[in-house]
Length: 398
Image (cartoon, rainbow, N blue to C red):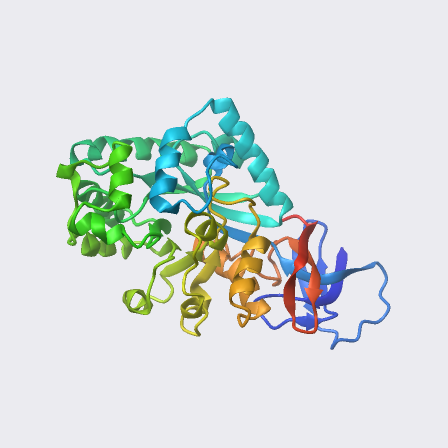
């Protein structure tokens, strides 16, 4: 048995404990969480750490298979520029893709991430996930605006999901974004969800202010980028009726992760608030700043109504410099210092675990869970905030 203590223990599911103790068995299972009242007496074999102890992090949105693009795309080019760059340089030698993805998996593991929701279009990263400490849910992504190819696109996604099923890994077929799915592909996906509703899906959501231009006019820089990559032709232009079609589809699932939300408004959120345990909002601040040099309206997401449904993602190394949930937390704190540390830690762990449906084993320090233990150092205890020197170290792997 191990007895772990620090200046503060953050169970996340309950208030922080000054000089608290986490008791774990040799397999990393929580036996007890002890409130010492702040008075830590002598205790045999007690391990005391300078900093705070928190559960393992959950990365609700990443693209492991894009890890080989690290440093290949210039920042602040906007979403149209980013899509154009991805189209030019994405595919390369498969060995390079796998080697970079393996290194990215190890980087996330070293940064205290214990579970992740990963977007995949091909099977390149399947073997990495089979052998990783991190437990992945794979979102097999649909992308296609040509109605004539919809059956083929969905069939390919079905075969990829089957590979994950055969390997014993959880996976679901999901739409890329509202602007990148044709009417027919939405219809096929809707029928699939109706006959076999998935437990969890994701969709890139309001990442660009230009998304509606594709529906209404088929114009704008984002539409031009899709045309440049051969993804959008004049006859593929969608219409606003796709939006209710999308909502009908998303509501058939148990949980839906809405990713990015960079241009989400208060009015936009109203259509989701009547489903409080179905929709989760994934914030990827590092990626938002890298691509568009702007962030979502953080005040909206820290409200009492929504704070239980917010989680973090790193996105990919094509659009971020690090795969670290701690770094995402630091960005949020820098731009919204009024958001308390215990709320940020909930976004970083328990909310993400609930979103992915893995809260039974990770996300908080509770009896019977095996969430892993992270030590965060460099804490400003006076303000109870992270600092630019804050760093994470894994004390117990999940």
